[in-house]
Amino acid sequence: MIVGKARSVALVGLEGTVIEVEAAIGGGLPRTVLVGLPDTSLNEARERCKAAVASTGLEWPKQLVTVNLTPATLPKTGSHYDLGITAAVLAAGEQIATDLLEDTVLMGELGLDGRVRRCRGVLPALLAAVKAGYTRAVVPAEQVSEALLVGGLTIWGVASLAELVEVLKGNPVLDRRLPPAEPRPTPEDPDLRDVVGHAEARWVLEVAAAGRHHLFLHGAPGVGKTMLAERLPSILPDLTPAQALEVTAIHSLAGANVGGGLIRRPPYSAPHHTASLISLVGGGPKASQPGSLSLSHYGVLFLDEATEFAPSLIEALRTPLESGSIHIGRSGAQVRYPARFQLVLSANPCPCGGYGVASRQCTCRPDVVRRYQSRLSGPILDRIDLHHHVRPLTKSLLKSQSPGEASADVAVRVAEARERQARRLGGTRWATNGEVSGPWLRRQLPLPDGLGIVDDAVRQGRLSARGVDKVLRVAWTLADLAGVDRPTASHLRTALALRRGEELGAVA
Image (cartoon, rainbow, N blue to C red):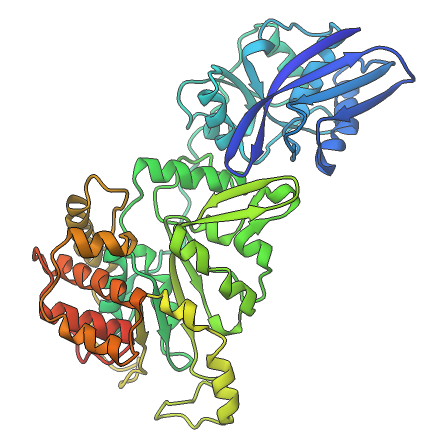
């Protein structure tokens, strides 16, 4: 019995494991058997690979072909094993050179005509290959730019099975990096200068950005809650190189085209309220797909009309808000996805939007209003650092109003506040005030003056133990924005008002 071997990578979440693809020819009626816990898309590789081999002018063995994916106990999902399976079968049939197969990882989906098509997860897979000590990789030609984001690998891009055969013969391969695309006009990014009025809401947004605090915006329909939330990413700092690599790997696993380079800006995700639980938290076959929570890792997750989301979706936020990750358990796999996002919620006061609004007449019954507002549970709201009531404008948008401050100017102050936090938190696992644990915050940093107002709020039941820590975090962010080394009593009072959603008055 002749055995051919190739290498590919199995992905379980973002964790990759280099697997050995073994192909044995001999005995039995002509058929192809695939073993090693393949999923449906991988089982269908038999037909894709046979047709691709025939289209290339090669021959699929007319005997029993057994393909084993080792380790056999690890679930395998996806179509990127096609190149590895085909190479192992052709090696077993002595139709291709095998010298380079030993230390080369192969990834790519085959078309019936022999073309090599793009596949998802190339970036995290190659990161795992480098970690395992491999130095060469074959990927689809159109994903060479993505593969080159991983250092320490010789990358060969192939557009067809025939080109793979040539690569394995040792023939030179053309540089498959695509030339830079012609710059195309793109829609202007949302900017805070578009926001007319709302000085207090703009300042709250700046505080949220400076300390990476979660934010709840509530108010009448049409006052600008969505407009404000969409502009939060524009005042956030760029991702660090390590963060950019992790975020890009997640988006690669989700199937996004990341050939343009690392994602340097904080991502923004705004799922619709009809989204399913799996689309939000991730999962699917073998828990292999990241959801919106992970796609907004190190960025912003915006839930517009949060009260319209199913309660199960809102409650699913509890753990990732605290831990910064999502753990998905299935019978065949346990997967962890990073999900350290900044949450922004928005909601109307009632179904008709008129409850508590002077300029509107509410038509909802009291029990309807109570039921509507209770869709956001206490435990979820307790995890939100900043609560702000966005009030209607007092002047028409058509009237002359002073232009708002641009996002670039606000971003400078946010970056300076972040630098102060980075220096203060150096040597810890945190980078911003919104992430710091309560015990460390209370024991390692000086407490601000005026703690009596916090004690009063706790005694009156207006503040939970978790809320105390959040007030302290926000107070430190206010101090960082002010450029002082320690929060004052005024910062503490403002932080408590922001936590309680109380009116702050005009903000300069």
